[in-house]
Length: 528
Image (tube, rainbow, N blue to C red; front, side, top):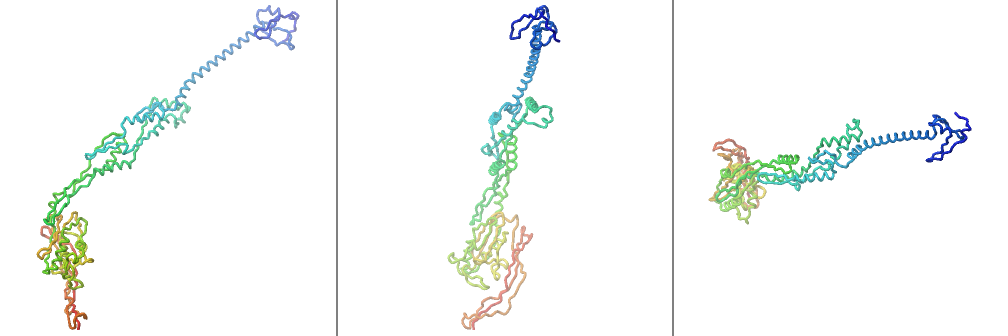
């Protein structure tokens, strides 16, 4: 409410401006009031001089500023308190943040028993490398049958997955999980709690070592080839054809190393990181099948056969030369013997002479005639030694020096006598002519205790020639001449058997061959 001015308010004392404030005007009556009047009005428009009733104005302004100061102080205190509370909360956060953001492996992580917490991946790799060096690296010793092999990284390079494991170690506390999604914690707080848990409950990681299985097999094969060896059977070293005596090599046991088992044992040591272990293995002995003592009691004359020759000197000369060509021959297991190959072509240059031989169903003289007696004698000895007869042919008609079915004719180069040695041991041939006798002996391993072979023949058919001859005109003969071209000969079919005897008694017989001697009708040539 407004008051009309009074004259007594016309005269006001003016106070100078203090502290930059507007001057306060007081009346004489205002000075008379000790306190501010609790009354305030706005100055009338136009800037009229007036003063409210009550306390002096300067006291009222002073009270207002006091309130303002108190409010500001209160606000400042609140701000300080808030700032202090923020600082107190921020400092632990900064500490957590420093832990979470550190570029090192979390505390409590161990690799191969080495604590790598707080290390960079580079420092951790160096620490593990040092640990590996201290452990000695790869020096695996293998002992087999008294010999020693040492496997080092040079022979078998090892590759350790250190970097891959350190990446896993570095990832501890830096990855989320299903628990992260289900947790009420923030990802930041979850990571911090994970790191805190790891520091108190260590995480243990281990590296693994890889190696080339193919390279390891190569090393095992080297050891196997060195240790394993076949047994050496005693063999005939020499045969003295003059004394009919043998010498023999010594037998030696062999050894067999189980390569598969050795590989598994070495691989197991490597997988268990037993890099400096010593592995001892033993081979399995292999005994020889044939000993020297057995050969000394076994090698004997297996068979012998003798035929009687004629009085023809040229023919006996040829028989002697053929015997010399055959004698001293050794036929090893699986090998074949060829009569034509042993003697070669019978020629005058070799000393063979003209003698009677069968050709074209008649008797003619040719170089080397009579050598069929040697091949026939050898046939009997070979069959009685239980050798495999591959090629054998009978003569056109039976020979007078062997029984029917026991001859073997030859003729260079297409008609041959061949046998094979199917035994496990060699055989040796001794052939000689002496005092009109041709003998062939075969030496080797015996057929068995008390076992021997004889040949037996059986006539299965006989064909007599016609009584009338066949006449053939031959203008080359002198006029009125007549001569016999072919003699009449009876035809035969003979079966030959190998008879096995045990201490002289027959235990079985096997068919050997069939000999077909064709019937020959007499042929007479004439020229009338």
